Amino acid sequence: MLQAWHASDPSPADANASSGAGGLGQGPAREGKLAAGVLLVLDYAERWPVTDLLTLLAHAAGQGRRARVLLVARPAGLWWQTLAHRLDRLDVDTDVLALPPLYRGRGH
Image (tube, rainbow, N blue to C red):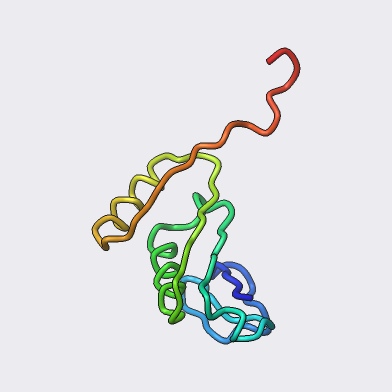
C-alpha cells in the first residue's frame, strides 16, 4: 500500500519517502503485490497547489512501476486547466469524467 500526504498533513509513521510537497511512501503492503502497478487516488485534488500535485505525480511515476492517478475534485475549474496544460507539456495523458450528482433531491 502506498500513502500520499500533503506537506501540511502529518506524515504517516511507516512512510519511507517524502518531499517538501508532502510525499508518497510505502506502507505495510509487500513489495511483490505492488509489482503490477500503482493506483493513486487523491480526493479533494482541487485543494492542492499545482506544483505539489506535479511533485506527487513525479513520486508516483518514480516508483519503478506503471502508475495511474485518479484525482477526485468537486469543481473542474482553473486548477484543472492549469494542471492539465502542464501535464500535456510533459506528454502525460489525461482525461476528464464528469459524474452526475449522487442525490438530486425531491422533485428532480
